[in-house]
Image (cartoon, rainbow, N blue to C red; front, side, top):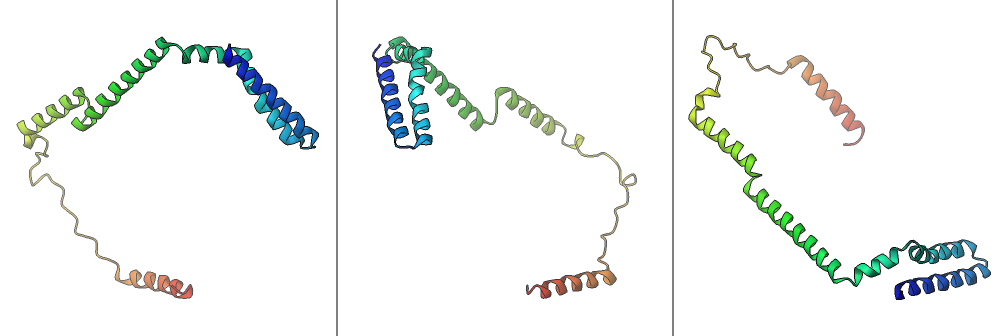
Length: 148
């Protein structure tokens, strides 16, 4: 009841200030002040203020907020510990299985092809002697032209 009265009084005071501002021929500012003044009145009329006041002064509501905060803290703590350990239990088990499989058969992951069946390696490509010097001279000319 008190919260609704305070909001209504704030709305009336704001509308009074808007009227004085409009009297001074500052209509845009008066419209903006009136808009701000009507917000608390609208909140009172929709029942939001009553709900907020009932929630703010209710010990049960505050206990509920405390329980929600505790749940959030548990989620955050478990997630932090999970990240430090390296993932969820399922992910750690999968990683352990992969490590065991690699330790049991290290040669199984390497290709088992013989020397004869491998393709011949190509020699490293040598830089072109004819076109390479011309390309750099063009670049040098452009840089010199711009003073770099």
